Amino acid sequence: MNLVINSFGATLIKENGLFVVQTAEGKQSFPPDLVKTISISKAARITSDAIILAIHHQVDVLFVNDMGTPEGRVWSVKYGSISNIRRAQLNFLYSPAVIPWVKKMIFEKLDAQVALLLTVQPEKEVLPAFNIIKSAINSIEDYKDKIDGIAAEHLSDIAPTLRGWEGAASKRYFQAIASIMPEQYRFEGRDRMPAKDPFNALLNYSYGMLYGKIEGALIKAGIDPYVGIFHRDEHNRPALVYDAIEKYRPWMDYVVIQLTTQEAIPGEAFERNELNDAVLLSPLAKRILIQSVNDYLGEIIPLGNRTVSRQSHIDLQMQALAQHFLKFAES
Picture 1 (spheres, rainbow, N blue to C red):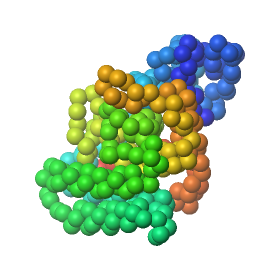
Picture 2: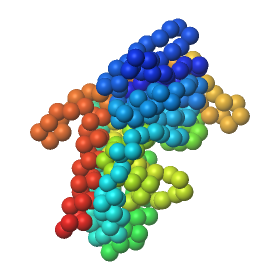
Picture 3: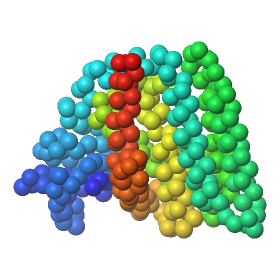
Picture 4: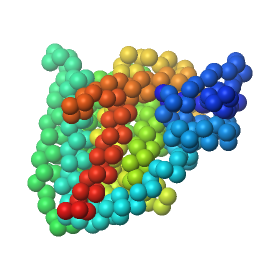
């Protein structure tokens, strides 16, 4: 269970060993053993007793901004305390093994994009959308061939080229997605900050939620999220999150595509900032999107010979990444 406390004036407290959400409408209790994460917006509050209860039960507490992106977090001191994992992570960063890892990371993202496009591709008779998506898939496959063929001694020698190809493939991908959007959700391209249309506003917020979940999974696995491998290190930004998140972005794309093509969010749930022409999500739009994302991440999917939720999939993959660092250090 993921608790999202974003109602104005809402307070999360501890009462009788339970998390209790207090609002103007009343109280609601939640057993801590059932809660995985707590997300607190600036409109809400949390008591220190509730924070300590979360720490004792290893519940991740995130303080998020209006875009759903974490501004800070509280976690147990038991997380990230394994120094040998972080030493192995740093050694891996400067090793020859880093280039195959980066290529694999990009392939997984592009494969997920192709899989999503095949899922939403209309029948052959639906033109021009069918041809646009088919052309985008072919283009992404071409970029995969280029990435596979490039070689270098150091990642820094080819990183700009890889980023360029990855970006070009994503541009074709989003052009294809735009071709199947209902008129009110059509968009020209990716607008990150700020979004200029409802689709990008939904996508940015869902990515913000995903950033928090990826960062939390890295910390729990003992990995330093600020030591990036492929994406550029920038002051006070968790660069490794931007590496690890890539193959999971299409999960958020799928959720937003379903919401928009089914017109599940009314037009009045979007607001426009007249100062910068940005499209913002109203509390109703956020509520629908947050519930949809959490439901999707809670769905059970195959992982090797196991079936686990998508959220558990992320956690296990970050644990596997930590073991990958350690195995490399031992080899």
